[in-house]
Length: 148
Image 1: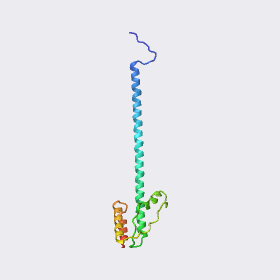
Image 2: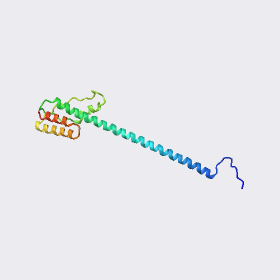
Image 3: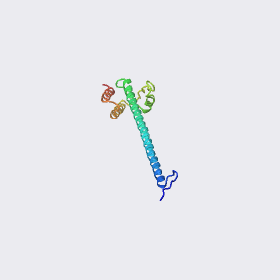
Image 4: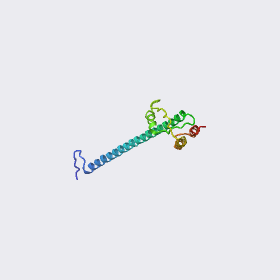
């Protein structure tokens, strides 16, 4: 049987092989693109989480600084009002700029000295438990609150 020359056109098997190669290449490229997209999305999520953690640390530092400034500004034995989150918001907003957004310490609120003392000690204890204040800062602030 003579072999026929088809003029360079592939037969049925050749066409199926070429289609399989093209489909395999497309699948491999598609899989690699998807992996890259997932890696980029993961990187963006990690960066957002790091950014959020930095903001929380700055906010905690601003709270600790406001408490320390408030405790330092109050005369010995004088009642000091608890620090409200609204008073700290300007400091957190300007945390990236040195000296910007530093709030003035709030004026001491009039009230019953015994109740205010307990409230201040409880607030101080919460800041210490949250890790915002170190043991030394906690002890110093407690001594100042107790007037000693």
